[in-house]
Length: 217
Image 1 (cartoon, rainbow, N blue to C red):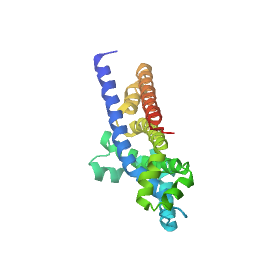
Image 2: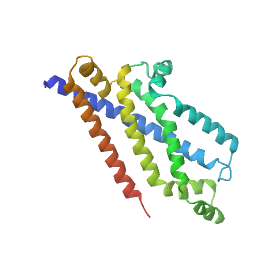
Image 3: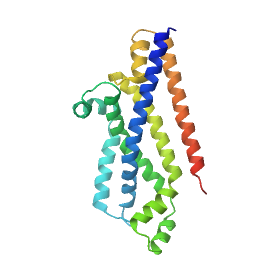
Image 4: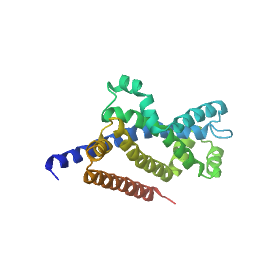
């Protein structure tokens, strides 16, 4: 394999890591608070607000129900308005982030569901405010579950970023399609798949490590 192709593979790998990191960080910053809000606004929770909870639930479910490849095409005008182009890594990060936010939110909500209600009740009986319950009880207790949620999200974003290559999103998906599939080069296709597998294993191993470190029980 030529040095030029090796450079293309390295560049595509860095592009994929950039897309996953950018969309992962933004989706975590928005998705974790959204997941907490979905949980605490339920009936009989510390910030119960059924109407807000139903509204957030509907919006979140709509976001999760749209297939990623359709979402990418549907929001092209929004992507172009936001980053000035509809192709490339920055453009691909927009639908990746939008797809990941509701995904993170529901996973975080699920992690909070695992917390025994008695812990929240005990905190409230000692006069804790809703903000204190969230920051001192819910988030610390769900820390392992949140790390698991972010790990699953990162792995999912790797696969989504590969799909983004089908519509000019850059990264390993774009490399595999342009140089592997279109030019009938099975070697490039194989290398692309192997790099994606290694990337997924790396994210999973890092996530498992963080979960173990956060397990305080």
